[in-house]
Image (cartoon, rainbow, N blue to C red):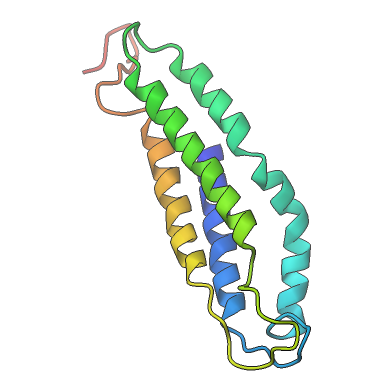
Length: 151
């Protein structure tokens, strides 16, 4: 469930950044759009700091869970590590590229749309789906009441 929280919050954040970038720059040296959009971005910045640290505990918790797999089964832990690394990399791209594309401080004109934010939103959803599927992939033994093995 923690994975769903991380993935959906990342996708919603990227979708908001895309929406924010569609507003024109009306006043030079000011963020685009009306003041309420900037206010929402400022309020969301604090929880975003905690959200950015989520992939590390997710990676550790998943490896602890996957440690119970049979010896010689390395594909699921490797897939989990790869998905965690992809999540960390996607967050790094999001932080490095910033919210709205950089324009000159004296620019006032049409919007400079951040299309990369839409791709990042899709990336969060795909990585979240992979992380949800990895621990419970095909071939997982499920305990059934009465001590019988699931098929």
